[in-house]
Image (tube, rainbow, N blue to C red; front, side, top):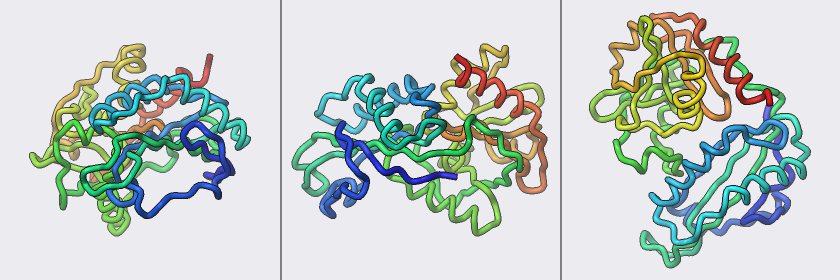
Length: 285
């Protein structure tokens, strides 16, 4: 269960949520001119914030912002201050949003940045593996472009919104998105992994997926520590029906296992092992 926060931080200033004012002329409203990070906090810290900050740095360059990116400590301190103010001491979801300030049309009148931070309390005190597996299928009514811009969490979310609606209308829990070559890219808010025989696969960034924080943590730290190899390799929907196990990952929920794709059904042995290891790595100091 997610509970609304009483306070937010706007440009490093703590204010009450109801005092936040956004103009209809804001570029965030008119053009979706910005990006965001979704994070999970335990206590007063975000265990994977280093990975989030690396993605913020990349997005900052892609968005061609003129303002200097605040130091990592600015956000770390802001996170702790907001969680304390909202009394979110156990576990919380955080959203850190950036948008180009000022007016203008497609050509902005200024190229500076504003940012705000929100927190939402969660009753889950760790990354919980879902008890009921997800049903998933491939959404191929739109294709996701392959470009560095689409590797960040931009505010351009139409394909994810439409894929989510399509999944709901078809009694599914999620949907895989494909690129123009028909390769599986990701789910609507998560990166995709599948076990094929003894091999673990995930789509490469060159196929157009978001450069997920949890994906990066698994590939660079958790899986090597466990002695598990994972190949970044392109695969299409035909491979999904031959997979032995499937799961999706993101920085807020951790690892979520998939029970079914079309008529194929999966177990979650590998997902369980990874979920336990993930919590040990992130929660035990």
